[in-house]
Length: 334
Image (cartoon, rainbow, N blue to C red; front, top):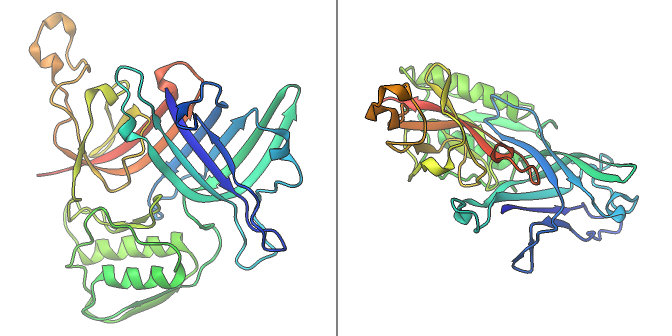
């Protein structure tokens, strides 16, 4: 069964009281809820220097109270900084189907709601949400002060800048770290209005300092556990092997050194992770009429580094193509 769990917590009211959280889930007291509401979702995870569209979530059949005046999930811009409703979304598969793997379910967003609106038309009641995967609005200016001292590593300078601008957002580095050779020959100072501008500078500068073939620069990416910092030079602690039972359709090249893989929806992958594919898979690579054993060998061998993730699905659409995680990854040369 397809699994999801959505928890929405509105901001405190004028008296400082936090309203009750709204919870929508396929689980009910530890048991499968076969009457769970239908949801549609489309959520991206990408580096801030290559931003994608905001995520969207549509929940069908919500209670009328969830659309009432008492439940206002939109940002409160009368406060500085604006108060945002928080949202946590977990997805994956539950045990039951032959190839489902419940260990792959988990959190994909621990973020905020940028816009919420309900609709009641005929017998169709929906709650639509525009969400961001960060616990803040990345479109709001922030005071990002940059002070990179001579001889200091870029990673240390980035951590100082992010901790000062976003003290409540941890820096989760499950990917190892940034190259220690990113050291500048003189002091560098600057001020940036937000993460998009700051990330552009970080990526471009790292490419200039560490001018090496196949190097794609330092990136900052959101994740459910905080900021991810990496540049691909130091491998992560583990490499995830994608099972052939997780692959939907065919792997394909979409750009130079870049492939795209459509997988059964899962939460255990993040931008910056390394993945490999099995030696064999149900992907036909040569004409079946040749009777060649090579047709069982997958063409995409080696290690790939994830640069973009898209979770897209409709929980009650029956075909397997309607609950997937789409991964873009670049080939890492040996």
